[in-house]
Image (cartoon, rainbow, N blue to C red; front, side):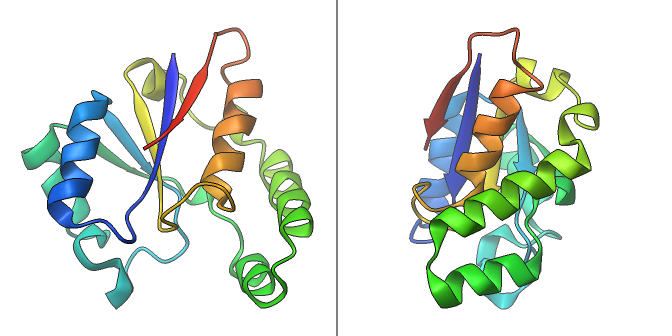
Length: 147
C-alpha cells in the first residue's frame, strides 16, 4: 500500500494534475490550513473537487483533522524550529486521534495528502503520512511516496 503526498506550490496546473493522474490514487486528502486564499490558485477548495473529478477521476476530501493549527505554522515560519514544530504537530494529531476518525478505505483505493509546500522535507504532510502508516495502517506494508 502507498501513501502519496504532494505540494502544489511551484507546480503548474498541468504538471500538478499530470502527477496526480500518474499516481493512480482515487482520493485526495486536503490537509492544508488555507484552502481558500488567493495563493491557492487552481487548488482553491471550491474549484479543486471539480478539477480532480474531471481531469484525474479523483475524489476530494477536506481533512482539517490533519491540518496543523495556524499558530503552530506561524511559529514555525518565524523560528524555523522544525523539531518543535514536529513535536507539536504529532502531539496535536495524537490528541485528535486521527487514526480513529479516518477511513482505511481511502488508503486502500489510493490516497494523496495535499499541502502547499513544494518539498515534503519540512512539511506536516510528511509527518501525517508517517503517523498514519504507523497507526491506521500499521498492519500493512506501507510505502510513502512524495510526488
